[in-house]
Image (cartoon, rainbow, N blue to C red; front, side, top):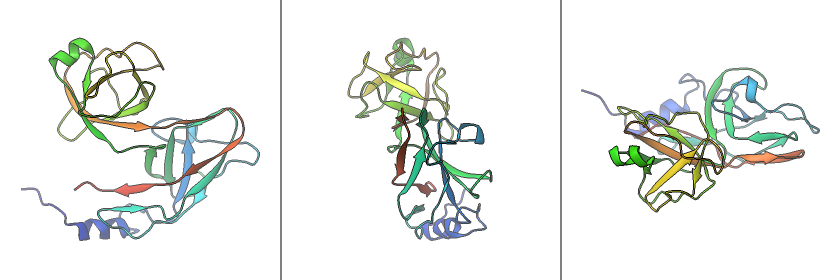
Length: 211
């Protein structure tokens, strides 16, 4: 049998510096790709980019959140796609990350008809043409063949309905060819492109454990 942890136990784990070190000297960072790494973190600019030290609020409902918004100086020519937590002001160990400006994840599925049409089914998904999305595999299931995690896709106008959508690897491009059924989750996010030097504000950063 598989035991289920009550909220109090999960909250205690999140609150413990021993449980993954999430609350030990956390620093927020900005990245241009997934997953975050030293190779895709912002650098340079004037004022210069730097990670931001922050604190977590007390955990509740199996989650803990950043206590206050953090503002980064971002150099020209950089696109913020990902916000991450490290345990040091430079280098360090990656602890958690999230797509920039992300919405909640929604379940998706592709059946045999979807394979033929490259349609992804998700009731009342709320997506619009041009939206950036990521796909996530779920426990016990595989993503539809043709879709990958850690990849930015763009919703396209072709085939877009209230309950179904198609994606491309380029903005306004042709639909990704889906070749086998599968299930998973989709998550809309909002990358921010900086043509010139500017600032980016991360208003929320939450670490949670599933129910």
